[in-house]
Length: 163
Length: 93
Image (tube, rainbow over all chains, first blue to last red; front, side):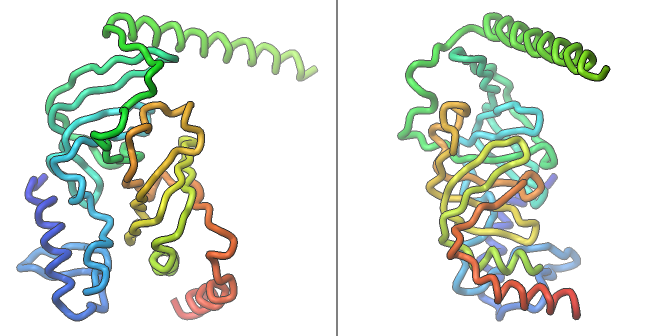
């Protein structure tokens, strides 16, 4: 994945605004065709590109419920992303833990949301307790088992209803 | 194409985006693209206590594929205009 894509996107948006509004939403550059969102001279800053989040601290929500945080270094049109200094924030009840992961490439199809974390605001409510990785993994296990137990109990109840 | 153009007209309005993972986010529609990816500004989560990790997030990018609903202000929609546009789209394409 071209890690120049992010920089290209922001520049191409500016480029397209200098042309007349194009009938199609494809811009031909050399032999490559790039799909861009509509960008006229008046909405140069209205692009949905992730370029404005580059080099900032972001929160990425994944489809499996995981929450990753890190610095956005690169992205592309599929919302694939490169996160530097990534860590996973695991939250169980009032406890949380940040598990460091390093340099991550996230496939865009798993991305739910990318949020820019405002460094001037509190990241978490003050009542939350920071715990160690082993502690949070234990808490996760307890929660998962409780959920499974609830699931099997419900199945048993539903079974009894069908008579 | 129709909904992309329609959302483009809604830029600047307050909307609530409900995602397929049940997370609902209220914010100002900043931009939209052909995939109906949405960028919101000044966001706040509807059920903040349930999603403590979202506390410091004020702007976000939402992938179009994960949106379940986009809730609009009732007066933010010109239903007749939308009606005509839909009919035209269905007829001509």
